[in-house]
Length: 370
Image (cartoon, rainbow, N blue to C red; front, side):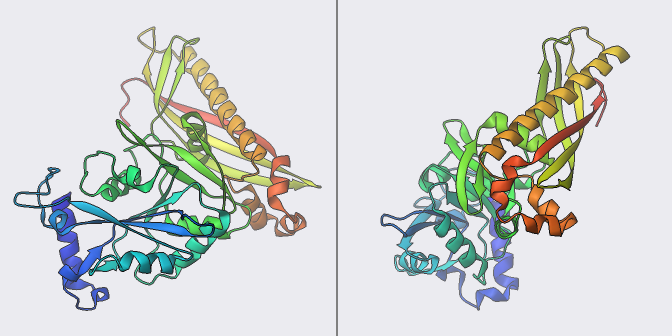
């Protein structure tokens, strides 16, 4: 991975005009940025994580920084200010190398940021010319140094680990990757709220099986693994979810994934929302050893009920938090714009939406090759 990254950087230097013919040794390639509340009200502290020259010239995967390398393979600079520009300038003043954001691949937002600060940051990031809109974004309650210090496969460049994790469709149980342009779209579109994957450092490595939910720019709460699984099922982001039915021959299903269709209908002063899920799952084991047609019919019905119930419970919780994670309001604005305009405050209306979840399940039998 490090050798490939070095090749990528070298090719960029040779082919990209954005470097302004500046030598590589005058650049600091920022791979990740963390945004946290500053020490004073209204301030923001921005952490810039980057590979050191030792890390860039290392071609092996050891944590030593390569043969002959001296110093750590990666480092972080921090700056604080009332704007992103001020924080950047404060960090830039600590080094004689130009902090270059053109290769940034990960942005981490503290869940402690105020709505005002998050809005200022989102607007500022949109205006940075060298920063494209494709970095992955995530939330974290832990300090940035804890997020990037977790031991992992690419321990020299932690940002690369998360970039691979969020890019790989089948590497995780849930496909929670969100890019900067998708975050901006959700924050600026009426009738839908932001959901970010939350990075949690653990002794076993970084856990990315929780989500942080926002109401507009305001962080509302985080959801644990069970609720995140329900969110993934409801939004078609489930990849490796499992289901177990001890009451039905101890049947176990793996690779439960879904596709979702949302239909909304205004009815007077209320809105009906129908979530139609098509689920596919693989029968991993069953106590009888083989499965009969009757068993498959029973298990299909049980799976449909279980998935529907989990999704409904999750949606009920989002309504209590006034956070429209499915985009019911957005769908209403597309299909019934006049009805949507009647609701002056969609976040106050969302708790009154009547949800119906319809689920159909296709079971891949044991031994089926997907």
